[in-house]
Structures are given as C-alpha cells and as structure tokens.
Image (cartoon, rainbow, N blue to C red):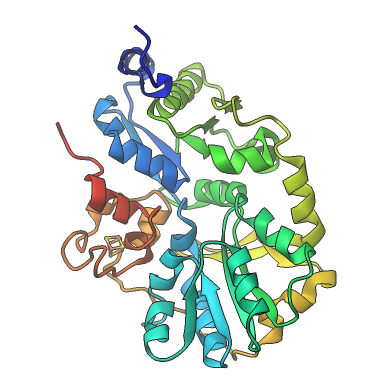
Length: 361
Ligand code: SF4
C-alpha cells in the first residue's frame, strides 16, 4: 500500500538507505548542506542514524541570522539609539552582538519591533512620524521581498539596513578554507527555486566537488545524499537537481529581475567566515535614499571578538558539529545563548539542542 504521504514513505526510505549503503565509499566523506531547514529535517527525522559510519553530514553557513555579523547588529542598535524604530524578525533580535542584542537594547529604551515581514515594517512607517528602519537579513529567498518593497515607493521615513547574503559564494569560500575537507554539497532547495541550478555554475561548476540540489522531506534528502555518493563513486563533480518538482535550471526570473533592478552584488561580511567578495547586495544608486547605512551616521564600529570558547565559527564553516563545543547544553542553551548558532531557529546548535542532532540508536 502506498504511504499516505509519499515523501515520508518508510519503504522508500529503506530503499534509499540501502542504496546509500551500497554507494558509500570505504574512506570517510563529509557532505555539507547550507540550510537550516535541511538541518531541521535531518535532526528531527534522525537521518544521521541511518547513514553508514563513513558518511557524515554537517551544516555550514545555512542560518541567515547566524551569519549576520556582530558589526551589523551593532549598526542596527546604534541606529535605534538615534531615536529611529528598528524592525526585524524575532530571531534576529536575540542574536548577541557586541555584548548586547537588539532585544537588550529594546529593554534599555530603544524602539525595537519584531515583525513577520518587511511589509509590516512599511505599515509601521506609514503610521509613524519617526524614522523606521527594517533590518533585512536572509538569503536569495527573502531578498526579492526586500527588492519588491523598494520598488513600491515606501514612505519617506522608511529605510532598509540590507544584510542579505548569497549562498553560492559562501559554498565556494568553504572550499578554500583550511580543514573543511568537503566531499560534496547538498544545495538548498528554496534558494535554488530563485537562482536555479544555473545559479551555482559561475562559482561551483569547476570546483571539483559535486553539488546536488535537495528538497526538504526526508526522502528528498536521502535521495540527494545517494546522488552525491554516486557522483563521488564515479569521480564526477556535476551540479545535479534532485528537486525538479520545485527547481528548474533558470530559477525564478521574475525574482531575479526584481533583485537586479534594486541591488548590485557587493562584498559582504559573514559571521564566522569573514568578508567574501560579491556575496551580498548593496543598493543601486537609484535606491540610495532607502539605504539606512547612508541615512544614519553610526560612527566607526571596531572589529568584534567572539567569545573564544564558542565554536560558532567552526560550526558555520562545517568544521565542527554543535556537540564539539564545550559550552553546548551547559553554559549555552536556547534560554541563555552564547553564540548566534544557539539563537536562530535554523542555527545548528539550537536544532541539535531541540532534536539531539546525532543521537545514537
Ligand atoms: S553551543 Fe553555543 S557557544 Fe557553542 S558553538 Fe553553539 S552557539 Fe557557540
């Protein structure tokens, strides 16, 4: 009998696990995904327990809140301290920056608001006589919404602190960092719906490491892992699509046009990684009036030193799993996070805390 939900069919899962066991090499391989939603599915469904010992799957820089640098959090706080209202998503408010978060700045009197979308921030601006700033974080999936609002002539007291990040440059950067040892990438399905499989080509086509676009159901992920292992076995390194029901080669051209109209690629700072060329966006000159960085003078913000015991930089670059951190579940918990990876709903540490990411059978 067919399982009522075909993407969670245990019989198909067993077949895929059998295929993975046949394809798994004797030498250890490290597969990396860059997506909090993938990590949630892997941890929640216990997929790591189904994999052979030689196959490890780690999360890289897949949590948008976690990769937002402390310097930009401090920028948002300093903007709020000028008397502006700063709006962002709930997770972003709790991420520690320079010894303080947006949430703690709000407790100290700054006007910090949690919103569910950029549209909500625009409505707040429409009802306010004060400056209202939306702190925009997220990858290629959320950036088009920011671009759409920019094109809709928001109120003159509205501006955007744009901190969007682009996934393919970060994937390519991981390969050039020491000791990452990546054998293959699971590429995020939702980002891929926007950029298409073609969006990985410029950075990753000749990198020598296979890339497989994956959906988010357990069977999607197992299937993508099997395709990665098949490429590794065959000595190939192609960009393959295991999520054709949502992703095509060209991506969403409407969203791409929105982005190209409003933004141009620019260097961006990633928490745990550093500054990567063309891995973020800046406003095109025609939209400079919306740029909160230009509208507010927040002074020079110095380099930030992370808590040395926090291993977020290693977790975000797939060089460690949360359980490798001595603070995990002790000094660092979701109620008392030390690093960003314990805050964001898509942060590896928060997910492992919730689902016990690599629990043995
Ligand atoms: S457990 Fe906490 S301190 Fe350790 S890496 Fe994760 S966020 Fe950082």
